[in-house]
Structure formats: C-alpha cells, structure tokens
Image 1 (spheres, rainbow, N blue to C red):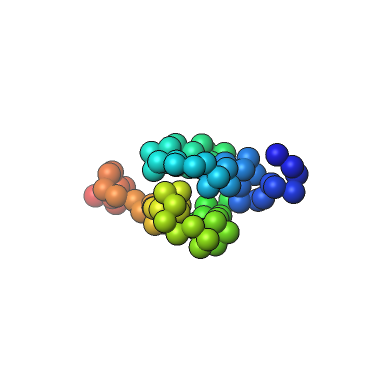
Image 2 (cartoon, rainbow, N blue to C red; image 1 turned 90 degrees about the vertical axis):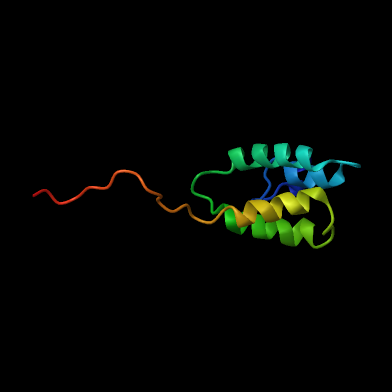
Length: 92
C-alpha cells in the first residue's frame, strides 16, 4: 500500500480494501469493521471517522454491504449512557 493511500480515518486501508473485494458479504464486512474499530486510537471520535468514511466510500457505493456496516456503526456510536446498577445514596 502506498503512503498516499493511507488516511487518518483508515490508516490500515481496511475499509478501502473491503470496497474493492468483489462479492464481499455483510458478515465479512462486519469482521473487517471490527478489525478497523479495534485499531482506532481511544482518543479518536469514531463517529467523525465513520462520517468521513461514509462520505468517501458510501456515497459512491450506497448498496455495498460495507456502507450498511458503516451506517450501523455510526448509529451505534452514540455515547453510552449509564444503565441501572448501584448508585451511592446519602447515608441516614
């Protein structure tokens, strides 16, 4: 991979390459996406990266399975909220 092919959003080129694979299936795209997501530095805002990836690849290939995986990732990237669990209460 040439240095010019690298991007901040996709430093390993995983997403780009997934769009080049003929006949790739959604399950394969999810696996590639997981590998991509695990390589994103913690300080990066994944929703911004996903929006950029969708703008770069998804608009040109809206029916590609990776486009749907990226959309799903974007929908699921909302900040998690605390659910239930123990909460401290004032003592009597």
